[in-house]
Amino acid sequence: RTRHAAVMGALLLLAACGAPPAAAPSGTPGTAAPALTGAAWTTYHGDAARTGVDPSSPPVGSPRVLWRSAALDGEVYAEPLLVDGHVIVATEGDSLYSLDAGSGAVAWQAHLGTPVPRSMLPCGNIFPLGITGTPVVDRAAQLVYAVAETTPGTHTLAAVELGTGRVRWQRGVDPPGMSAITQQQRAALTLDAGRVVVAFGGLLGDCGAYHGWVVAVAADGSGPLLDLRVPSTREAGIWAPAGPVVDADGSLLVATGNSEAAATLDGGDSVLRLSPDLRQLDQWAPADWRLLNATDTDVGSISPAPVGGGLLFQGGKSGRGYLLRAGHLGGAGGEAFAAEVCPGGSYGGTAFAAPYLYVPCVQGLRALRIGPGAAFSVAWTGPPTGSPIVAGGAVWATGSGQTTLLALDPASGAVRARVEVGPTLRFATPASLGGTLVVGSGNSIVAVTGV
Image (tube, rainbow, N blue to C red; front, top):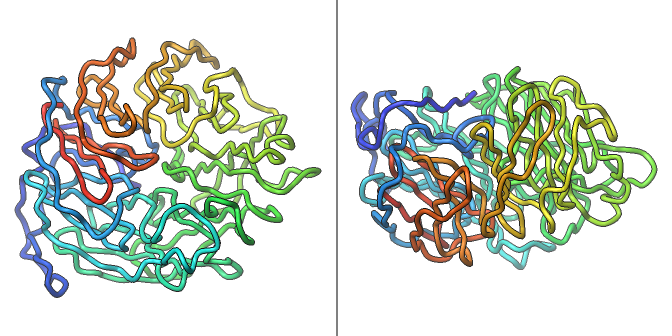
């Protein structure tokens, strides 16, 4: 599984050496594969636990825009990734890009298909629909994995060479029985036990016969497609941008949205623990899951967050927060602790730097102090923001109408710096490495230095 090492600084972004490049796709330049040294941000919020912490950055100085990329071929909903001199970007134009981390220049582009136009989608709010879920990088294999939704509405997993942009292999990941056109692949990908893990939910509007699905493919593209469908009659999508979380024991944690169930708990509005080969091992749901199902009040608007001490945090649209025992989720109403956190609900991805968990709430970012024991309290409330990360001794998130990157004091929430980055899309979240932050802004990427 991907792990985020805590070493080195910004110069590592530009260090490259090693084997000569393989042939790049037609019309796209290739670059040599770099040596594996230092830190990297290879997956959503930096590591498979989605902690969102970059310990490689120096203390915040005077942040400023370093560069803004040229317009790419589609909007950027996925989190950019930073690894070995590359800024890896996925677009709704069904392309992966590598941008030079020092200048923003395009090193390569891999176009994976034709995105699905609005006219072919039964509902939704992203048009056209291409690559939405954050890719994942296998640094040892020097591969980037991404799922492209392509016309007429199928989902294809591609393995793309990190150094050159050459497509190594592609295969479909729509399992038997899936109504692919009603499914959206918004959840971030992850690596676990030698497999690429992909989760699916529905489109905005809850149209059609969609379900929560998780699929897994061997990292070399071989072998059978493993899949698990949440056992709901309909809905129960897995759509939070942070995607599946890999726990310390290698199991997967996913949170689901509402389902149609009214009498029997069927996996909707739940946290599920899955084995690496996608067997369901455990489940938790709030005691009022029936009400949440009936009112479209998803538990799964954020992903589970490991917070130490054998505990997980789960929030959702209801605004209530829960601590779950990781070793025994507890079934319906079996949480270890619960309290109000987010009036109006929480959406996106969290960040955890003990003792604080930073939760993106509709009415303002909340810092929860975890502990002592199985409890939490609200330490401070900040401005409304996107999904936060922690870097350079500050909490970073988009705010002020989603056009400003804010740096907040981690212990008080006071604003320490502001950088205008231009309009960002919903659930936008930055990535960080060694003193540089990158964030999507419409159909371009903005890099900020002085972090």
